[in-house]
Length: 291
Picture 1 (tube, rainbow, N blue to C red):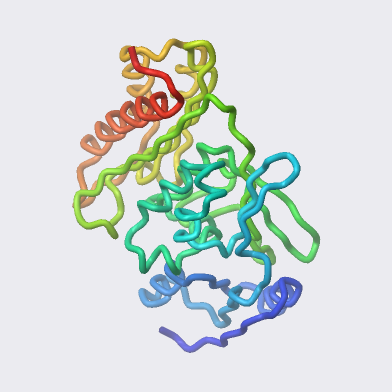
Picture 2 (cartoon, rainbow, N blue to C red):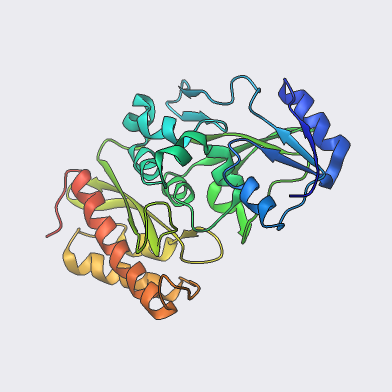
């Protein structure tokens, strides 16, 4: 690595002031599982690394008065998979966190880091898209929220401004008759990237699909929100044919890269298969059945 200055602010105000002072030379670090690897590969060479680990309150998990689940950016993947609140109110997120790499990584890696890193192969972004999550950001000018499916702009790129810090995630409550599923295919080891991953959430009403959310990882340059699949499912009976026809539509919107995990046609076919499977599991979790 190149030499850099390391700063550990005690408050978020101090952290924001540090970002303003150092400008584009500054990079934030939380768990370090993403940034450190980029620095080792000389893909990122910050002159100043600003640690967030001392910022109080950014690792909390709470419910607000509207039953929105509020999760601080410093909450680790390990906390997400084991928190009773997360497991009750956002089981999809808990399951996606559980499937991340190894327990060593999950103990260090943070929710905010997984979001800001904007790696399209990571597990949490598709789950958060399927949960209609909103990203909470703070800068010296104030606070704002961005729907997570509008947060990612390109490969390793987001709407985050140089003077902003992601402070947390807000997840709205789901209907009672909602089920979810997270599936991924790993051709190598547990800590490798997936060939494809799918997060699905389905709400049922009187035996029909009232609403659905489908998102994919490792399928494009950003986490992919499959709205075309959702539109095809809404108002339909959960039949095998309906799921197959809806899942097939994802083939036209995925844009994977060929690598040792598979060719582009193979990954496209896998995306279709795993969307269909995830939808079936989500319907079952909602108390329904594919007929």
